[in-house]
Length: 333
Image (cartoon, rainbow, N blue to C red; front, side, top):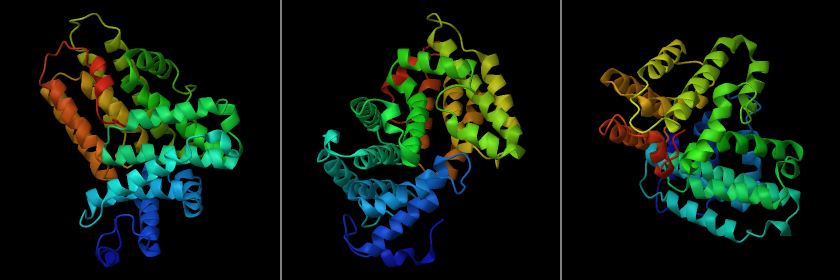
């Protein structure tokens, strides 16, 4: 996953080092190990690579945000010796605070602040941090302060920002409140092809029609998982687990080849369906599925999400797990 000469970079205290080779290495590490996991298909259109990284080279706030995400991943998967990711993270937060009055900046400056927030959200996913709600709240607050998405979506970078915000808005909704979760996921369960937040995969469908069977299965997984969430959220207390809905999801997931494009969109759906599962064979299936995705990404959020699922499974089968998602200290995507 990383180059053989990586040990040459690990000497002395690297936290907040001003040495350009190390910082450049982490930017490259982000490109090789994180950017590709943030899209359905990793091609020349990957904005996390060709839009975000050049900005990081020119803007210290975006730079520190990217470095924090890369350092968290590196420390967890390669070596944490003498590397302190939290220092990069805190440095990014300090720089962010210095730019909190976004009205002082032009469109380019405002977009860079939003990019830094999105990268910090990625860092929270990579590290399994509980800060994700706060960070996404800052994103939403910033967009509101700037006059809404239409004002932000200026140029290629602005459109990229809005696409990412819409996507994460759907994923974070069940972590905010039952009302947010039901209102948002009810849309996705009934019309995923038209639901806001699916622009990335819709574009992939048009550009890569040879993968149409995979896209259809991913849409179906999302539809099934969101329906499972909504049904459970609106169920009367004491309603038993919906075994048939979970089995239907498992059947669809088994139909999706493990090397399919778009796997980035799948863990969120697995988590929702797994939370409703009630039988040992279902639990075993979902454990293996989440472990597989965790090994693919190297992100810390999925192992933590799996621990949460195991707690749900050990409790009453009649509990409304959708309520507990609002306090889950990890972003399960």
